[in-house]
Image (cartoon, rainbow, N blue to C red; front, top):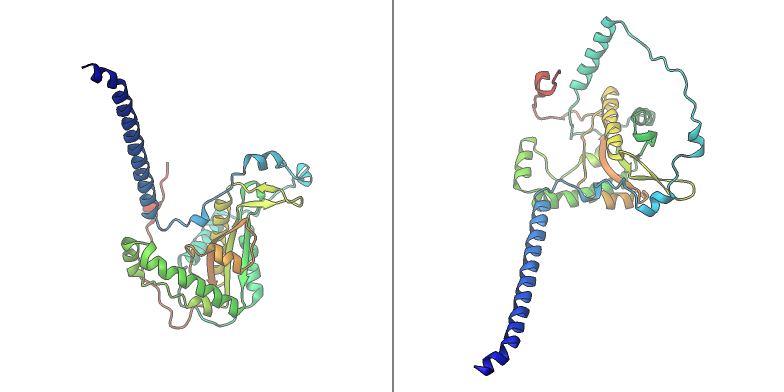
Length: 294
């Protein structure tokens, strides 16, 4: 009995150590499960391109160095603005004609190699550059590719990644949803289209003194510019297909020698529709399904 009393503190200490070890082991196991669940959730959204994550927020040290305004912006002149006004009848006519023009827009994957004037592309880009942007930072770069060798390199990069996307990353549901559109990882139009326009968003600007400049709402701003770009392409009688090269951004950025503050948002092949072009017979939602009047 005396021996048991003498050893009790020792046994208690051992038991306490064992309990601590067991609790720590359980905590690690739970942590791994939680990490696994997060990884699983991330894998269930394969369409989210990690490279496109918006990094508008600057580090604290960069914010401290960041200037509020450029000196030439402090006294920005405001000038009178008198936009053209139309009669109600003319407004109705123009709005209907513009709708009918854009309603003919389709995503076309069969693009002719017939040449188009470079000035047309210049004007299309100018139109996209009229887009509004956060604090007028204009956080976009439009890279126009016409060199056949560069176009083919772009195609090789995209097809390599797209095959992996279709076979592994995208998941059965997404691949099944695309079957009706008859798409796959082969992108012949990247070679045949006279021009490829790659739209990069500038996640931040770089001042003349090499300090970062905040680009507010950069992804939204560039997305609006892309919408105007699509309208300008349609207005010129040309076709395109919106291409978001999943997981290709870094390689394409290096190929085109773009700086680290730029991330690829979209790629548009531009040209005439080929004579044998076809498109899925899709219908757009009626007005009452997309508009709510309060």
